[in-house]
Image 1 (tube, one colour):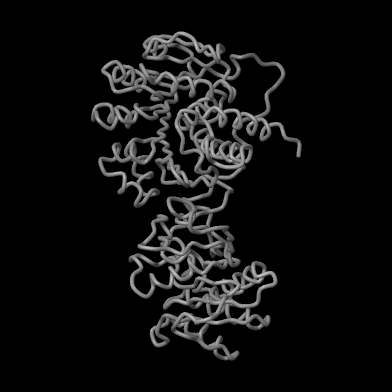
Image 2 (spheres, one colour):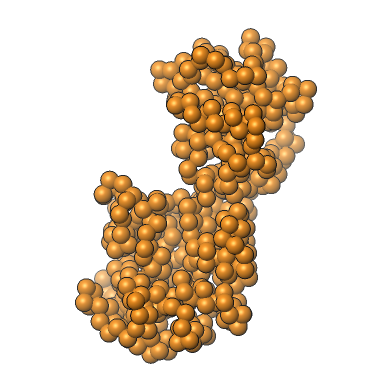
Length: 495
């Protein structure tokens, strides 16, 4: 997959390059004026009947955006107070011009939280995408005041204290109800702690033409709508491929069966499950064809092989995994298969040398083992570490978690916005493995199958949450059934 029509997601260096290119053309109005007007119009829609606005403006260009917001809101007869934390003498030219324009219309600034004021909206223009250090002292206190105000907060570009590239909270971060982000989405709004701090996202491109070569994108419904064509009438089960699932050691048979059921229900023509435990039938899903794991790993005619759900770490598991890696079929490695690869340099080298497509689906702890680092280090920069795994293992990778990151060996990366905390439950990764395997079995290119499967899995979690009224207690089996319904809707909807 080399192109995407989905929304781009840009890291700070890419945003800076786009800003510099635009500034060289001297656009009218300047980017700061465009951003401020867009955010002011959004603020006006949020305010409804409210009138009082507090703009918390920081010492950089994010503060300049805040001055523009304040000026427009004042011109529309809102009561605007600007708390300015910086030094006028140290402002960059654009921000200094924005402050001067605010003062030219009678606007004033204060350096303290206004006592006795109860605003109807707070505009967080304290820090933007350039923040790298933890917030401390007076700045941290301002963030605490915004968070404890009890009124809606609109953040400009990113909530102050949130790292724009990684989603890490730098000490403390604003918990916004809305974020107006400019030029493009930022990864920090979408992954790790970002979704808990950004609120509802509003993207304003400011009229810039973005290059088509940007590496980062947001996964959306388009990936699902193109994953599989409608089925022709003149077909048979062999038309939709053979999915193989290997795992299910003693005490963990359920993991392999969950993956197998997901592959079956998401459309694989035939689904084979090889359990190390020797299980020979799934009474709840007798359509699954259970085989001895050693027989399945050598079975001819497999369209895809998924190894890992409930595999364990035995010598037998290691031998099966080595055989699977040697097969010239698309291979998905999950769970214990990833742990075995991480622990054995020979297996790791064999994975990296594979000629067939390889898909890896680690959660952060498994990713840490694959990379030889700590889970905290993986989470510190999820995009960079997903890309590192993709490069090291020559594989398409999904680093699971809040805002799952998919990375490809060519440097492309994607963030998935679907899903909710209800997916933090046993068996969900097994279901994802089965969904992806089913898509590959039916002829979807493996990389597309990974991207589509990740997005579909999250959408199914969201539908399950809607069905029961919240995220608590969603089961992996429910997600499988919801995913089946959504996939059929995507393929056969006539709307």
